[in-house]
Image 1 (cartoon, rainbow over the protein chains, first blue to last red):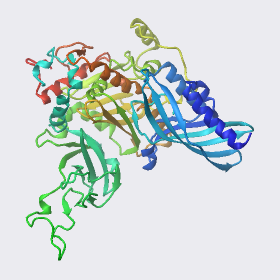
Image 2 (image 1 turned 135 degrees about the vertical axis):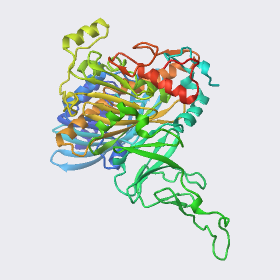
Image 3 (image 1 turned 180 degrees about the vertical axis):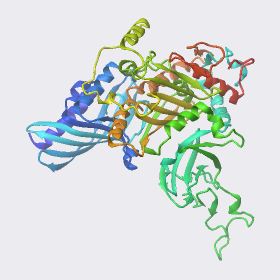
Image 4 (image 1 turned 60 degrees about the horizontal axis):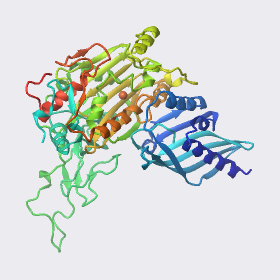
Length: 154
Length: 419
Ligand SMILES: [Fe+2]
């Protein structure tokens, strides 16, 4: 399997797991010290550190999924991600900086779909043989006026 | 047509759904509330620290520009050129020595005075220009009067309104001064576009009853429980309030027994990492949770180490933006900065203990629309005269306080109102 295939496989798998409500499995795509941050674009543009979601390791990502399953109430919906092709830059060793854009649509129980969010993924992906994992996934949210709320991960 | 007869009770314990859905009500609110005798939250001085710094915002439906002039003084204006009504500033923030409208390049200084009109005297040899009696000094951006409280900027459109400190009252003053005792550091912004009437949110933040019921994370992890020492304090006019609580003031047995008796499930689950639950107590009074709502457009939040101003920006009957300014203090240690960042996970649109509020508002908004003549029930903690102190957390009394002042400003107080 080529590097390109491995990286693309991880990207495809991540949106597959999100769109099919396999959130527990999605968390396992991150390395143990993997970081997941969701950041409003306006904060980045202003050099501000404020985030929407921050998980500094895989256990924190698992905790977010647990909280969604057990504690939180949110809008009932299905997610559908549409992603663009990735720009891949080797960082040396087995690490790659990968950037791709996303559109995320949500469909409510009445069958009405709406564009929920657009933005991009700024990933650091680490390859271990054929296995690829997220070392870091920064979701830069262009739609920083978040419609209603942000529950299921982007 | 909005009249005094809209209420079915005199103590604001029933809220007619029409108040959330009537276009005339909304239009009157803009005039009587947002342009009325109130102090509106504009922003924080820390957002415009340097001379020439400016930022744009919204007060009700009105676009607003605020800046710091070269002498360091803060001004706020309606963000609208006196010429043809375009926004003088379209960007969210910046630094400048003046404001030039992009349409016809009319130029204003940082006090809002009109200082330049291109071709005012016409073009030599060709004519044109404004009438000779047009004087730039007669024109300025519409001023919004501002007053500061420890770096919090409040503004008003009203000619006559009590001084800011009197408006806030002793209890809110005490809390806001407590929250701003040290210079503020801006962490960033979060925005939430909620498809519901703004007053449903104004009620939500005044309703302590829902705190540990809607937000299971609260009750599960002991951030806010009805078994905690806590309550609500209102100003003498009942328009503002602070809801507060002290973590750890109950025992596990007391907590379990109380929720079991109330038939409220507390699920058995744990977190793998749990860092999000750690915090550093930072106020000597032991208050770990304080939600201070100032009528009509802001709530200041202290939840553990998470500090924020939540500003309501109206966008029509069916829509508002909840604009969160996350902050800490200049002297935060690296450890404290880390705590504040991790606890961001609990607040805002993606917060474990606040995402539910957006959903609750949207759902209630949609479901109340078809029955304008039905009412919501607001009597947890009892009806009748509104007290200034509530010594438990099982109340929505401050919601009635909100409506009592709302009715006064809207001139729809019921005959023989109890407040
Ligand atoms: Fe809430």
